[in-house]
Amino acid sequence: MSNKHLTTTTLGIQPDASRRRLLAASVALPVAATVFAGLKNARADSHGSEAQPNAIKNTFTMGDLEVSTLLAGTRTVEAPQSIFGMNVDEEEFQAVSEANFLPVDKAQFFFTPTVVRTGSEVVLFDTGLNAAGITAPLAAAGISPEQVTIVVLTHMHGDHIGGLTGEDGTPTFPNARYVAGQVEYDAWAKMDNDGFKAKVQPLAEKMEFIGDGDSVVSGISGMAATGHTPGHMMYMLESGGRQLALVADTANHYVWSLAYPEWEVKFDMDKAKAAATRKKVFDMLSADKIPFVGYHMPFPGMGYVETRGEGGYRYVPTSYQMML
Image (cartoon, rainbow, N blue to C red; front, side):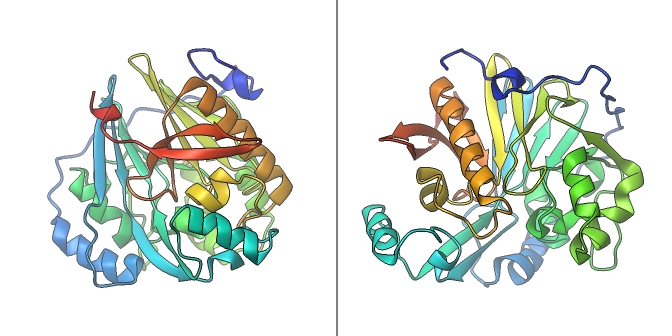
């Protein structure tokens, strides 16, 4: 497929003519929070280290949209093959890792929500591990929790819903409405999951439930990208003739998941479906040269993808493209 724009229909998605549009919310006063105070809490609660990150937000404009990727946490994880490439032998995993200059005994995880200013709305995609982790980079981007008008949940894993409320259960974003995929919400509502019960269900009355092809606001559309979870969704931003895909957890690592889409990932609930979704999504992004943000890509979490050999891909981090 080489059409100029990737649309919901290229993923086999039909818009829902009866979808409910989100109501506009008023924007609160400018941010007054102190960034460094939030960073201290984020390091202790999210980063798992006293080492301060070099950067916690990356902001650029795309047409009428201002987009910021936010580092809501990062941590080192041991024994990465217990998570990635579970269906390949140790020798293959080691050879691929060495070819990409990656150690095989540990990996660095990143948690990267995205916030979009549309002019009338402030739309946050996912909320990180906890409230402290998300409010610090938001402050660095010049946004207070009170200014967020819409919170979009790509799926219900704990590292995406953790920042919805504080430790005392108080909503982190008091003026926000919430958007979630209907399929995803319904699936988790049937599970006995403490995180979902504590973080998501109490906010259900403020939630807008959408499906494939539905719009969050003008220029932001949802797309089904299932497999990682039953109703996992990605989102396409479009403004000024440009596009940017927020692929969430379609791939969880730029080599061990994206480059080798058939490698099984521990966190994928339906591993075969997740692999098929990776190939479908990254084939399309590659064909149309559309940049994307991956929630777990190395911060700032944004790059391009190109095909590599038969059924594989190569991740190309952005440099200055979004500044032009």
